[in-house]
Image: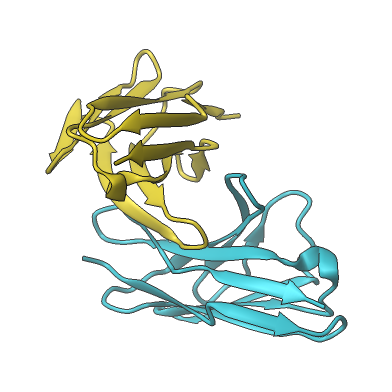
Length: 114
Length: 109
């Protein structure tokens, strides 16, 4: 089946620093990838749609200067949390649709800002 | 705006029971509906994908149905096992996917 790999799985950073999260489609090409944020015991909140070779589309209320998305190739999208603060601590997950239109998710990244 | 509701929010059953999880959505103009399971601290694992033209999909002990006109889907789990304990999410795809809040299932040995 289609596999999406997300890295790192956990990261702890100091307040004010930036953190980059990678999302790769391993065995298929993804012109579009999705980035979500999940708070404890809540469902997924779509943050943005990453488009290969063009600008990402952000959901209402998501700061695009805070959450930088780059989709430079058909298999890689990155999310950079800039100038991270403790309130950015969360679980971030990416996904991509395969040719069968199935959503495939990465393993998620637990970000803790101290 | 699509709204997705999952009932119940939590469910606890003894091992071996058959059970049904429910997912309802407000806008029937969808491409497909997908069921996932999520273990604590992990990503989502796809269980079943039902296209809008389909009525049901089966995989092992799992069976998912879709009634697009009434905006409902069910996930049936047969002969539940402790390893089935997880949160189950449904996602409705109408271009963007909208997720329900999930049903947290606990299967007791």
